[in-house]
Image (cartoon, rainbow, N blue to C red; front, top):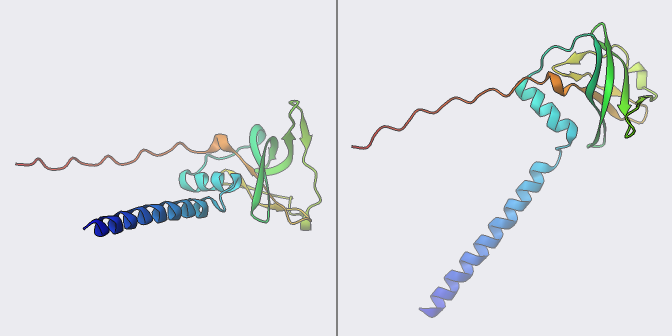
Length: 153
């Protein structure tokens, strides 16, 4: 009987340890591919965005992606005729610096804003650049309320 209890206890400990390890592995898998751009893109896909009208926006996020990694900067952008004209990165001292890169095939020209995110621009270093408009993200939709269970007699 004692051997049975020891065996049962060992199985329980092993099962618990294995389940914890697999949960950690799953969490790592889920986090892979989630960078600042992907997180924002998922939110905009889920909720949608209000229209971005012509003007200067000082509350944008400029994302630069390369090989699955992303860096997101605060910035400002000028929208003219519904398209990205110039954009700037906010520096730590509160000033802005124009974002200047050499673009592949003029990929920075005539970029529209679709669902709160600019069309992708590509640098000659194959960096993917987008401008995100967080203030245009639509509010979270309320979830349906579940009906109560029937009473027990």
